[in-house]
Image (cartoon, rainbow, N blue to C red; front, side):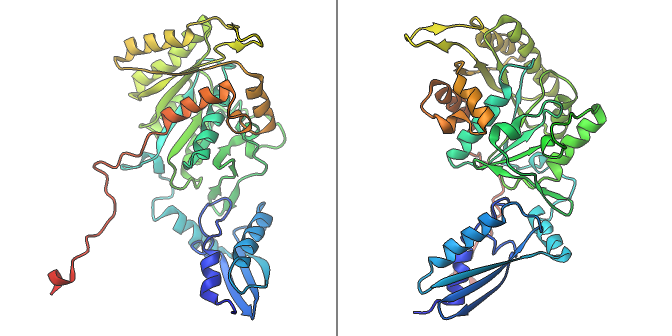
Length: 379
């Protein structure tokens, strides 16, 4: 039995654009489908000529169409959208919202925004961020990571991002790594060039990453903040007033004192604190004992001080042991929750992910449903 065009288009509807994560049929990327017996020719329009994932897209189209009963051969031809098609696509992706609007700040947004903060550098804040993101994505959630540490960006390497974002006119489509959408200033710099900017530029960059990047409908957006309580922390509070803070510290008393200041920003900005993560809590030795390299009690101390300061419960979400596999995963671009999910550090980081992955609260939210009247009522 020869295949039909509706069968082929139904198969193409199962092909997702690797970056936008929507069916190519919904994005207007299928230009034509022609059949000659069991031979099928599909013409696909890429969003940009230099699409870095065109081989992936071609392979996915061939796989899905080949699975249609009666198909004996598949030919995929790639073209490029013209300016009018790209304009229509960007308007569709924005869903009619204002171009300079931060979608996560809209009333009724169901995305949980968590800003991962620390008082000082070197406590493993970025490692916590990327591992939590990868764990959430592995559990089926739609996750994005915004690397807001403009001067000390490290997220692209730690998540193994291989290519720059795709541009659709004035829209930026972020690359996807391990199921996580990622955007960082490091994707726009040449080589390992430093970013030497002051406050206004930092604010505009963060705003652009929130307004011009196509994040889609995320369950969780994680922001990897720079250490301290500077410009970016203030901008996050302004642009994302509903964002929660997840404070990372080590057991060391000096680090805990500085971490307390990062959490105390929440009092001035009226942001909730999602919890405290104590990183590098101990090192497990071959004989089963623990070496407390950075002392003990830092996480509990930060929790106690923040609860007293904020007048609200602040949980100690997890204590993450010091493990060389966390560092190796960051260098290799494969977070330890994926490369060695049974390791003590990975299990603790999954505890952090579980604390972030609460169900969406639909109570009181408009669902956009229209009541359907029964036929008897219409008559």
